[in-house]
Length: 501
RNA sequence: CGGGCUGUAGCUCAGCUUGGUAGAGCGCUGCGUUCGGGACGCAGAGGUCGCAGGUUCAAAUCCUGUCAGCCCGACCA
Image (cartoon, rainbow, N blue to C red; front, top):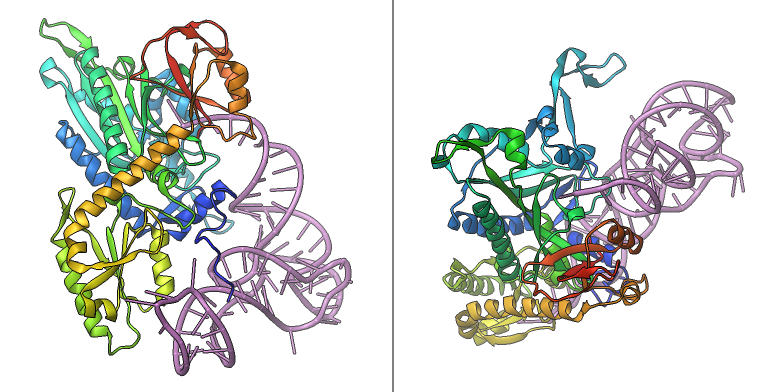
């Protein structure tokens, strides 16, 4: 009926970026809103991406000596009170459990039974430093018990007022690493090591360039001595914090009595770290690569590398075409990409060809392969790459199979290069407040600004007015003398500033 | 927590001012024509109009209450 729009997603990124984002999530079948406010249902295609993220990160955690464990969803309220800054940071967004039984309400329906009120309320974990720290305090007695290197895959709840699919939801999935060390140096090294792991994953698996850096005081995790993050730039030139790694010093160890006897027999407090990434990574993935036709997935995280679409005009042609597709799939699956078999799906659903094709475009599958009777006869396939757009081309079947791994590798690199180019284009060095204001004016596109600064209330106030945030001080920043653009005070390092999610 | 708005089919919404047998588009089912392509025609399924009460011969429509959600602000790792 209605002529299809020029792009598969309306509006386009240019027209309305936030709305485009929502439509991509929907069109790609990643997730949908649920009956619970602020919580989303992650659908199979979206969850499969998360499973790939999990599998690859998990291997990296294990390779760096960590083990998985699982701690309770509930945390006694008193635990949160022990670290003063921690309470302040999270108290305002906690879900609280106060009863353990329901009963019929005289006025109809159900109500929490007054007789089943908990003596001490439980909070649903917004993060697990306190409950895990309390557990660790029992695990550690001697320096010989250290280090403890634990990771947990879990869900957490933060009662945010404003939610957005994947980027900020009330409940979200993540991993949280928690480690205990005998020295500050070792704990700091762990913090930096995990930051490197995150950056490696973001750049190599997600094809998303990131800046590794340290957060300013105002952006620090509540209770941490130092917070490091990886920061990515989205296509709308807003920054996204994609992962954090915290050096907690002895703050949590003191609050939770994590102490041990050192070799000389003295009882001392331990040094702890924590680090995490969440389903927010999927939001970053979407906003880094996707285009006006929907999701674009880097091959390393795509639930399927190749979607094979059989095409036949009638049921006489079906058996030959399907047999050819099955054989093709078998050959492709025998190929390897990044030490794993190539992932292939044949889509033989009884759906019109054009619609089926566009569904796979919108879902971001890296390679779409169409096989019709003419291809069967000629020993060819019609293949289209998602990353470069265009309609695709007919290629020899054997060539396609032989080159599949190289093609996927090339796509992964192409996506990274493109994202890096976008970031480069949007990055500037600024030495003057007026220029800074102009760069972040409402009418300007914005981006990443590297500026000299001195952290403090004056800077915070200026930034708030401009709706700009200090993202981080890059860990590889080279020292150079300059002046804080906000206060004029001397500075020897540049920080990165941007509007942010 | 303050201000504004909305609850009607699976989805997006019209109808309400002026009460009188519940509507459209998309989606879904079937048949047909098309088809290396997000097509078209015909037929069909699907709703106690958020909930409770009131006014009335008669309420999706008017009144009262209530619940839920959305937007702006505030707030926000």
